[in-house]
Image (tube, rainbow, N blue to C red; front, side, top):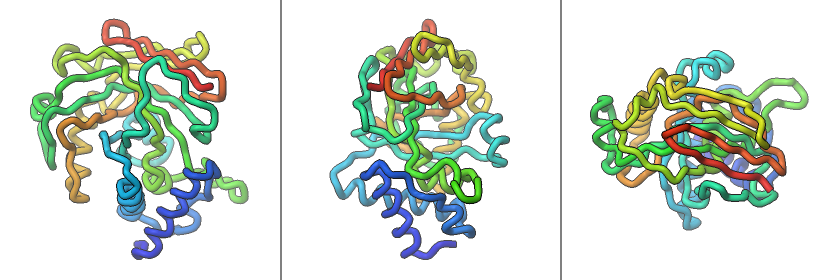
Length: 266
């Protein structure tokens, strides 16, 4: 377990990396005894700092929901991070050069909430609390090196969670749907980068049902004295692998009748 000074120190290191666009080393190496609770404490310390600077929370993201990603990291649980108001982009937008360090894209289903969710909830409660579901892209970025240059060690889940679950932005499509209008397990997308199909996937890749991710998040947040609030946007988890987005990349996700969403990196 980390003490308060170590938690705040790690949070400051990550905030500095974000501000300077210079990645920091792996926290899992600097603090080999760091736990998942420590990682969420570091994430929360950054939330307090950002809110004090005038940012506003608009929602949450759920990550590591696919079986493939969990097996790759040797874990059996998703993770989560916070969405801030300056992370939101309109579909069709151009992301300016230098906004992110190493941006990547994932395709997801976003839930827009009309009522709060707190603690253990049922699938029916999630749907009742959801105003609409929306096609979305998540922009990933990392303030921590993906791999340690000396040891070759890769980031672990504690690095990712401390780094706000690698979240950096959200792009929502214009279409809105009632939460029960589609079987979300069968909502899928064809994702192109510069006109080339790079990934396809189905909502079932997210814990067999994207709603399951929302249930998990409500329970996870309650453990740390938080809850999902009305009006917040929840990214339920990706059903494709992350796509690298160097400058000049146009990403287009076609969800068929569910909608489309796109963005370009300048």
